[in-house]
Each structure stands twice: as C-alpha cells, then as structure tokens.
Length: 252
Image 1 (tube, rainbow, N blue to C red):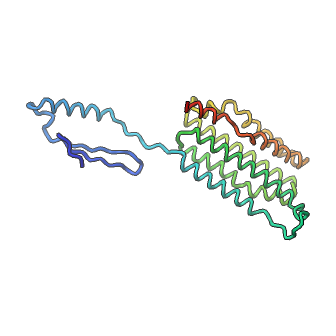
Image 2 (cartoon, helix red, strand yellow; image 1 turned 90 degrees about the vertical axis):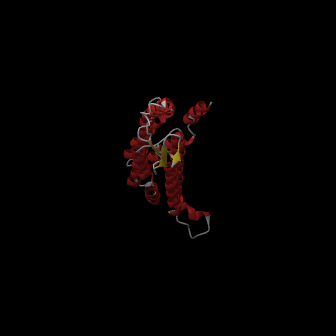
C-alpha cells in the first residue's frame, strides 16, 4: 500500500511478470470547487492512466537453448556409449570396428554442425513463440535418431538399407532445421537480422538435394551414398559467418 497525497494505491506483480496498479480516489474529490489544483491533478492522472497498456512478458530464448544443448549432449553421449570396446590389445582388433568408427565420426560432425548453427540461429533471435518451441522439438526428434541410424549403418558395414535410412534421417533433420529457421523469421519479421543474414541460403537448399540423391543411390553403391553424406558435412564444416557478421554490424 502506497499513501499518496490525494489517493492510495496498491502495486503487485503476477507470476507472468505483469505489474498491476490499483488506485483509489476519495469520493467527491474531483468535484471539489475549492480545490481546482486537485481537479487538474486528478484529470492528468486519469489521462495518463488511459494511455497505459499492459504488455505481456515475452518468452526469451534462454530455456530453449539450454534444453537443446542438454539434448544434444545426451545424443552424443549415447552414440559414444554404443561403441564396443575390443577385448584384444592389438591395433588389428580395431579393423572390424572401422565402419562403426567412421559412422560415429560422421554423425559427431553432423551434430556439431547442427549445434553450431543452432547457437547462431538463436543469437539472432530476440524471443520465441509456441510455434518456434514445437519446431525446435521437431528438429531434436530427428537428431535424437542419430545414435540408432549411426549404429545400424556402422554395425552392418554400410549395408544398403541402413545407409539409406541414415540418409533419410539426415534429410528430415535438414527439413526440420529449415522449418525452425522459417518459424523464427516469421516471428521476427522479414526485415529482421536473421532474415537478412540467411539470404538465399544456398547451402541450406543444396544439402537436402544431396541427401535425396544419396538415399536411392545407397541401394546401388552404399560407398558413393556415404560419400555424398560426407560432402554434405563438408559444406557446413566451415563455420557460416553470415549471422556473426550481421550481429557485429548491429553492435556497431
């Protein structure tokens, strides 16, 4: 309770962060003929109060980023735990595991690429919405399948079906990332920092094409299909400077 000169008010904040102010004016104050200054102050107060608008608290990106980082860390942990330790001590014991190790390295690189780009994506975003949250979960769903497809392809020495399924998961993850990117741009606006940084996004368009070509090619030659997966990773291995450049320009 705050005691003002001509009225009392109560201020309180609800859990969502909205601040409420409730004020009372003594009866007959506005009509006091012997206090014109009071009438003016009350009218000024009423005019100012009429112009106030209640703005709901915006959802920041902090929790989404922390949750996504945790999920990606768990995915990588699961993948490395799937690697079987050989019982022999010679280097020759690693030869049967070579396809498994290769598939693990490839998937680790892909997860690192997604983590890097995901980080840059939300550095350019100001806030999130319900649609962005669901789009992010959609991306994490496909990334969570990496340990399964990685192990299946590696354990079966790049057999056609597991190799094709691996490419399908890569394709769906790329599509999910594109959906997340468009959801953020729709929220931020066409003139936002992210929209200007993304531009034509030729790498984002070329990558799904490579996966789409590699999936049927896996039934012809799985090594060529795997080579296309490696090519897709090499496209993104060099960090993309577009968003960083736009962030630096904004700070200047």
